[in-house]
Every structure is written in structure tokens, then in C-alpha cells.
Amino acid sequence: MNDLETRIDKNTHEMVVMKIEKRILIIGDDLTFFQSAKDFMANSSTEVSYAMSVKEALNYLLSSEYCIVIICISLSVDSSIEFFRLVRETYLMPILVIAPKLRVSEKVALFHAGANACLERPVDAALCAAQASSLIQLYSDAKLADKKVHPLVFGTELIINPVYRHVIIDGEPLELTRTEFDLLYYMAEHPNQIFSRRQLYRQIWNDDLGINGENTVRSHIGNLYKKLADVGKNYIQNTRGVGYKFVPPAGEE
Image 1 (cartoon, one colour):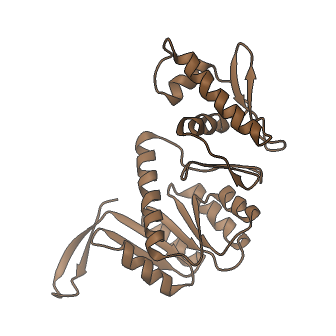
Image 2 (image 1 turned 180 degrees about the vertical axis):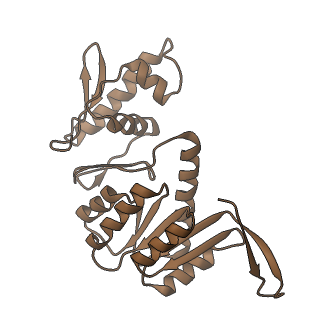
Image 3 (image 1 turned 45 degrees about the horizontal axis):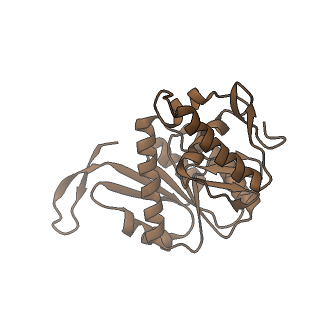
């Protein structure tokens, strides 16, 4: 996204050519917050636009390419769901939600609809800018590496969020190591598919199964299985002599 734009310099009043590398779209009805966020995010190569309605936002999205959409929800979550889905199905960019304190079911609905991260209002503009920058970088890196960045949501029971590398089970966080998270996320992307230790080692460790490879996979899977079992879950199942599979919560297959 490298567009050249001609503008008038506020100080010299001369015509200057600017190279726009990022465009950020903020949607909502809080003009004060927008101005504060813009002060943190806008610079010579980043343009920040503001839309007060879904219709206006769609016009912006149709006219230019944006690297992130920040949506400020004031009232009902339900009213934003359809817009989220439209953005997610049409554009490859992160969605950051800023909303009042939400119930777990409302957060689940947002993640289902395509949100990548959620901040509670009132939120400091500097924190919003930092989170937006992190998501933009994450998506940029993911595009280059062809990685997934969308949360995996299984009803209200299980959320696996690669943005924060968080696992939420029944509304409570589950602490996992980086490798345990990678194993869970990868298998959860392919529910009920059996993976051999060789396949998992190649995917997670990016290497062929060596002398100690089988023990490495077995050890990490064992640790993951124990942590899940400690909270009463049996998502990882072992098919003896074949491999491992992720079995989603009942009704979420």
C-alpha cells in the first residue's frame, strides 16, 4: 500500500508529495476519542480516517485499501455483527473492537464474527494505538509467512486466540507454553483429523523427525493433555499407533 498523495503543508503552505504506507479506519460516534487516537497514529506515512456510520465506513473501504479497522461499539453488540462478517469475508485485515465491559457470550459473538482483539472502554488512546500497531504488524508478518491470525471459537466453551496466544476455557484463561499453544492451535484448525508425530514435528518444529523427535512430540502433547485434563477437558485424544487428534466441544464439530 504505497500511494503518493499531494497535500498542502500546514506550516509552509507549499504543495508537498506524501507517501502513504498505511491507512487506518476508525468507526464510531466518539469524535473526541478519534482525535486522540489520530494524534498517536497519524504521521507522514500513515493516514487515519473516521466514519460515523456503517454506510460511511463501507464507502471508505471501497475507495481505498486499509491495514486495520477500529470499531467503537457504544450500544448493542448485535448491531455490529453483520458489519464484522462483511469486513471479514471481503477484506484481509485485522479488526480491533473497543466496547464497554462485555459478557463472555458477547465477546464470543464478536470473535465468531471476525474480531481479532477487544479493548474495554474507556481506553487510553496510546494503548489503542499500540494494540493497532501490533495487529498491523502481526497481519503483515502472517501474510509473508502464510500464517493464520483469526481466533478459533468453539461456542462459549473454548476460544483459541493467536493474537494474544491466549486459550480461554469456560471464560477462564489456560496457561500454555508457546509450543503447547502451537500444537493446540494447529490441531484445532483441523478438528478430528489424526496427525502422526512426524507430521506434528514437521509442522511445529519445522523439521523432519529426528532421533529424539518422537519423544519431543510425546512430551509436549503429554503436558498439553495434562493441563486440559486438569480443567476437565479431553480435547486431545490419542489413537494408539496412529497419532493424535483434536476433538472439539460437543456440538461444535
